[in-house]
Every structure is written in structure tokens, then in C-alpha cells.
Image 1 (spheres, rainbow, N blue to C red):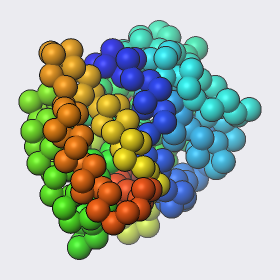
Image 2 (spheres, rainbow, N blue to C red):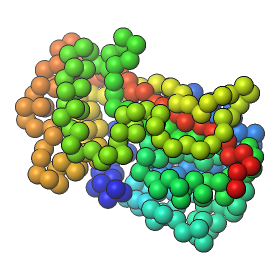
Image 3 (cartoon, rainbow, N blue to C red):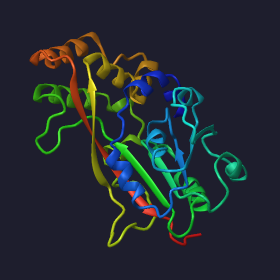
Image 4 (tube, rainbow, N blue to C red):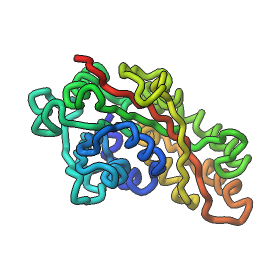
Amino acid sequence: MADLFHKQAKNYAETRPSYPERLFEFIASKTPNHELVWDVGTGSGQAAKSLAKLYKNVVATDTSQEQLDYAPKLPNVRYQYTPPNIPFSELESSVAPPGTVDLVTIAQALHWFDLPTFYQQVKLVLKKPHGVIAAWCYTVPEANDNVTVVNDKFDALFRKFYAESQPYWDPARKLVDGKYKGIDFPFEPVGNGANHTGPFEFTTERLMDLEGFFTYIRSWSAYQTAKDKGVELLSDDAVESFKRVWNEDGVDQKVVKSHVYLRIGKVGNSA
């Protein structure tokens, strides 16, 4: 799966949504200490950049060196290329010694992982019992609570376009469309009075012109899969249709809204 993002590293870095600061403040409020974070599947460092403001050190790993090359260089962030499944024997040298990590984060990537193996590694590196794991996904831009993504016509066209792209998405994508409600997450609720691990909802916004929105679509794994099969999702007809509804109000740049869904829990005393 990482190969799909190797080919689109520049598009991914330029157009993927940034995450709201409120998300990171919420997560940081759940960790007693703020010494070390392991940001897994960091991509081009979208989350690592924000985590570095709240934690002393961040180890940010990814299976794509091409993605890491686009990540911001920060004094307290160590970027590390790793294979898709880090051998347990290399976990300490690549990430951190056992029981030393305050927080493990996974932004828009948990659905790709070998979860049983990964969760064993998480439980090994996190401090017990209060070490925290936080995993979140964002859906494609969607209307919610009567708030449009761009405008009503654009939203309707985009919903149809996304539905037609479904054959080219990996089956794991259904976990994202389900807002991580159905993903295996064997951790304890964290925080006073907490009785569940989410998903907790946040909203992110990005100012985009239409070409930027097309570049975002081109960063999809489904777009690359379709292209490899000889199918251009952004056909001339699709592009013209999007242009008509985007430009209807004469405003070139628009605020595009996406919704972020967070699962968060603590490791407890589990083995």
C-alpha cells in the first residue's frame, strides 16, 4: 500500500488537510507527561509538526522515504524510515526503548496496519499505565449539520464522484468511511469519567482553489490505483462539471471543510 503514496508524495504534502490545533490540545491533555511521542505513518509530517509544539521530542516514522523528504525539518523531530512491519528486535533502535513513550499517534494510517502486531509494539513502548494511543482519520470533505463543503451543487457532484471512485479504493477505506467506529481498538478510556474511546469529532478547514482541490484528489490512493488500471477519474467531463459548480459564485478560493474522527485510549497495565 505504501507504493501508492510513493508516487504522490508531492501532491500529498501540498494538499492534504492540516489538523486543527484543538485536536492536539485535546490529546495532550490526556497524557500526564510530555516527553516523547511516536508518530507512526507520519507521511510528510503533518501531525509531527503540531506535536513538536507540545512534546519535548517526536520520533516520526514512515514506510515512504519520498514522503519523509517533504516533511518539515524541526530540531525536536527525528524522522525515521522503517519497513511496513518493524521487527521487534529493531523497535528500540528505530523508535524508543520499552516503556519510554508517552504518546503514540497515527494520523490517517491505522486502517493500513497489521493491527495485532502493531498493538503489541504500542503496548511495549508506551509507559504503563497512563501511556496514550491516539489514532484519527478524516473523511473526504462532506456536508455535516447543514454546513456545506463548498456549495450545494458542488457537494452533490462530489458525492457522486466519490461514489463512482469506490471500485478503486482498498477495502480498508471502509474503516475511514465508517469514521473509525468499526476499527479494532483494544485500549482503555482515558480521562476523568471517560467511558468510551471515541470517535471524537473535530473539524478542519483549508483554503483551496479548484486546481488545489484537483491536486488533493490526485493524492488519493484510489486515484493512483485507477490510473494504474488505465482509468482517469478526473476526466475532461468531470473537470468541466466541477469547474461549473465551483465558479458559480465567482469566488476562486474557497474554504473546504473536512471532519476528523479520533479514537483515543490508554495502555493500562496490559501485557
